[in-house]
Length: 483
Ligand SMILES: [Zn+2]
Ligand SMILES: [Zn+2]
Image 1 (cartoon, rainbow, N blue to C red):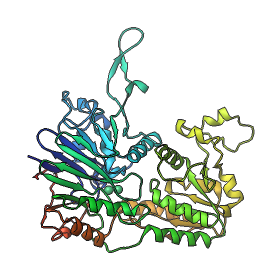
Image 2 (cartoon, rainbow, N blue to C red; image 1 turned 120 degrees about the vertical axis):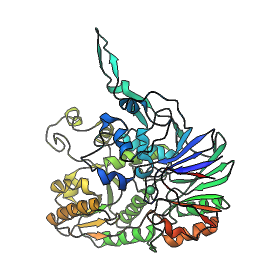
Image 3 (spheres, helix red, strand yellow; image 1 turned 90 degrees about the vertical axis):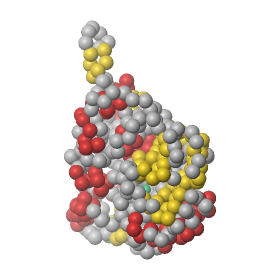
Image 4 (cartoon, rainbow, N blue to C red; image 1 turned 180 degrees about the horizontal axis):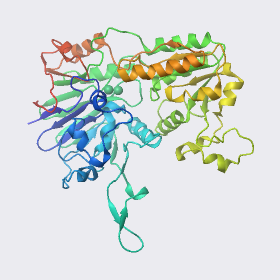
């Protein structure tokens, strides 16, 4: 008997955790964070207690109680004995937090399947995290006492002895796991490496869209996914924007940014999602058409270098059009006279050091000196840099991100606005399009794939899927659906 259970992404946008099993084999599709549930109880500074292992997470329904998938160091904190691995793999559709970030809680021997780009993005997220990194690609054991090297007694486990690389499996084509054959089929969804899945099961073909849209620089990929998924018996489909008719496309965003940059005589500051490589191309092309350099952060440069390792189509950090913004950190020694490189290096973390001597580096002094030559990526966390840069009158700020829709987002936006007012950049200009297909596209997908059963996930409006297939099955959290 093949069955499917949704442990997240039910009546909410994101948090997808879908278990497919047949008695012999159990596979997870995505294991992401539910922002809505998490923010119901917690915020940035008030988080579940690590000391309670998975306990706080289970208590509030942030993680499902599924056997054989979780890390034993956390289970041990709850007094739970070791258990055997009981899942043959988690297949990630893409590297967004609402699909991938709860991998942190999984045991290190549970294989993680993702496209090469998805795994590279996760590696870069873990390595460049500002605070406590999520253990997405390298597991770090906690809560264990180990014998002291000298003398008697024990001490807490620390440093590299905590580390075990997770079992990462690059998805480059079909894989057979148990009775299932899983094929990743690339789709466009704004960041690199996104894919849907087509799974051959003993109960027929199951297709899972992940998150997708039809425009952007890989829009044709999504068309191909729809073709390939035709005739699926079961279709698990995202519905983020089922209630929206919006048709703004990435190509239009690019042309708007190009015009906005053309109208500006001084520095142009643009905020766009850090890992949205389609938007990066749009801003890159806008800078190019206006003969400006595009200045990115070291974090973004690191991501591009990681993606370049697998031959992804992203601008090179050595590109003549790209500049890397080296900011003052820690003791603020950058730009100070007579500081030898080895002392300057002390201001930066390991992953960042490679950029100190990079040929494309710029500092606030360069941006101050010739503001009209640059387009700079600048999000909320970069706002303090404006104190060093001092954007002159005639500079411009572009919001190329989703408009706020939750309380937390409105609060953050107000802070951004205060910074913009302080520097005479308020209110800025907005141009953005979504990484998710709108209602008309979603209805077309359902019609073309024509599944026997349609399961809407990743949506606050599952009821709007009624009538889009012969049968529409509304998932309930933790309730098995027999295929
Ligand atoms: Zn999502
Ligand atoms: Zn996504």
